[in-house]
Length: 508
Image (cartoon, rainbow, N blue to C red):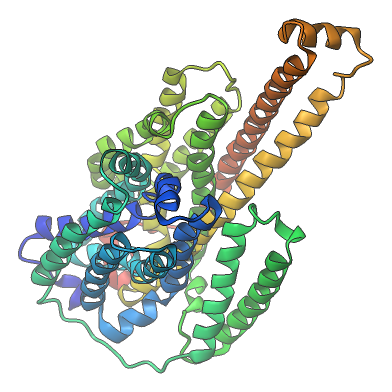
């Protein structure tokens, strides 16, 4: 049986699978800090360069929920090896791009082949590990999920500053070739049952249009001033209609391209809701803290990366222990502890101020790492625990897709709230500074050293900075309560979650 297959070298197989996934997750963030350099070299505006991120995100979001269909058609091993090799090839093509148009096309292709890689890795790791050690496999994957996005901006900045931007893509080539060769060699004896399912064209087309349009709305909404833009309004309407048709069709079709009936499983539903909401809040933290460090505290992108990097320390140190011993506890309890810790670190950031030092920022990041270490593995185990072995790839694909979409919603909403609330606080703080206030005029004159215009400019900058700081504190206060609320969500799941239950029972 496929669940009992063991590769010749389990450690080498794990390295191959993990390296490929690390490379794929890394590429979701590695290009972010390099966009100004890429824009300058290819002769486009900074606003146009953001399509390098958007094209990748749109294609990956469309490909993710198709994982189950592609796995049924080609088998997990063949699909993984093909996607990993194609990822290396498209990375090379990104690196040799001579225009922004070429780069966007190749990034879209890279995102399309990247989509199935993470869900299939999850399914393959569960399949090749004995039931009692599957927690270890999921803990390792959780560590990759946490560390890669942190390493991305730091690595991207160092490569761009010291070499050139194409190397952020070229480094994928040897990794992709190595990982695909190892996995193909180690798992070639794995027997897989493939089918020739009919292609659900209505589901496929409405998925591509609906998810593609939604991802573009989320990525471009802030830049286009949301619903003040005709483009955003039209894209939103197209997305809403397409997704509505997609959902109705997929729930009624006999052989849907995306199996939404997976949500009949209680643990899959509760675990996926918890994963999506927690990841959205976690993503908001990862986005807002570096932005705040650079805008309010004057950090460079590299130093902002160093300040946020301690987040990955505890997950790396605890991976072995979480994987080995987590099964001895009620996983809902571990996830609850994780949510409480992450909520408390958000409340700590709600008390941050402009003069705070590097040490305190880094220490809160380090503490949050404890919550992250206890978060991913229990949630992944819970949401997969009542799926059958042949449903795992599809379930992981759907959950990862919704998690990715949650991150996109979070990115748009977080930056929108931060900006809008900062403007509101600026208005409130500035309303008492008028030409009719002798105290205001005296302060302006003193700060400007006799030059009222210069003094007014300095005070306006200070008010702007304070407005962003107050808004930052408010956002983190809200994020703290979201994490606390998630404790209730995860207790909707029910045991057993133990890996010892075995694949036949659907437990992991």
